[in-house]
Length: 249
Length: 305
Image 1 (cartoon, each protein chain N blue to C red):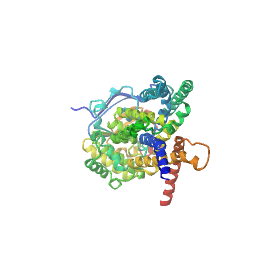
Image 2 (cartoon, rainbow over the protein chains, first blue to last red):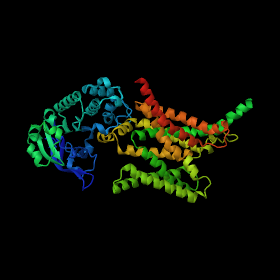
Image 3 (tube, each protein chain N blue to C red):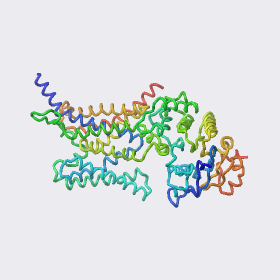
Image 4 (cartoon, helix red, strand yellow):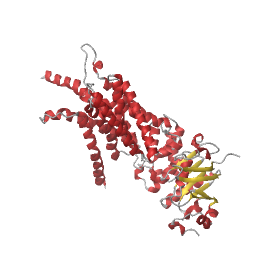
């Protein structure tokens, strides 16, 4: 049996020993699954994601394995979507330029973006419904279009595991559906997906699995079962965000 | 009349052209790399390097005992690397944000450099604080040997600056993809494996080189303006990297030319006895053009709305 796309064993992250944001996380994701990382504000969800990707200090790098290997050896198989707000949208580039950045590694040094790469980038833009915006400066795109653009950039990387930080935060309905269907298509092709998600109302309709997280992994399993047992969440001190609490039956 | 015209032409070629060429080459070298620095939101780093290399330059000069570009470059490189290392150490120890840590270190280094200058500079004829701030553009002129070609008369500074400009442009073209990916989204570039660590170090090295090469000729005030201003002037008008670089360099060259002409001829035209420093004048024009450029954009937007 091949190694899990992502496996954590006693993974901890944070800027110092006194400032632990992620404590002793242990879980593994199977191939072709789609998992929501759910927890309250400040639970350390983004830190967990960034720690897994070595973007923030972690305590023991060997506690993370992608396909049984350290990240450095499988970079081409891993894609990451940052939060939309972390990007400078005044950067002088058009939508196509940004998607093409997902192809740079495969192109290699000193090679220009040629016809084949452009076509591939355009195809990814079409998948997220942005084909008409290819030559638009990114500063002129709406919030939802920007989010779909980042999804397209991840698509062209043809990764085997995609980690997303809040892909559904503050997006319009069209965007939410476009991203959800693209992710489901990817999962159908065997890609593993882990996304930080804050809207408890839509977790079950989009994701099949969920990880309930608040500094620690509190529960991990099928989304319906994991989130249904709200007493579990309460027991572990999770204060659910007011606006979403009402949606949980 | 023909003699007068020939004399004016000759005086332009010998005294004005070398200064203009040196200033334009410095603009191309620093302005090109400055675009990457500004796009990465690291203007402070350019500022820091431009200040921090001073003690290294002075030390290199003192050790070699003369204007040796290699000694000064080595000194500057050591000072530059030391600044980054100490700033990182300060940041870790104090939890200051990285800009603040860098600010503390480079001002200290610059002060050290000025102190070194004051102590040692008195014994050296061609090393003084004025020269550090405003460079020595006016001292560049063509010395054509009696029976040699004009090439032999080109001052060494111009060759150094030409090399810096060529390196800055080749570097930017060769690594355009990767530099753009790092500037746009550094974390993504890291994970996707398109930003090898050596590239960022190479960027720092090439930038330091351009700064050191320009420092001597145009001084620290203009170096800082050359790094940040052209890119900022282009920012409100460019929607692609290509247009950003083109606008910044064209606007920068025009303003540099105007700045030089203003400094060279304004005192004569207006019959003032005050001489204008050309490096200072160019820096003033470049800085003034930044807010004007943003204002122009706002005006154009209102027109089209």
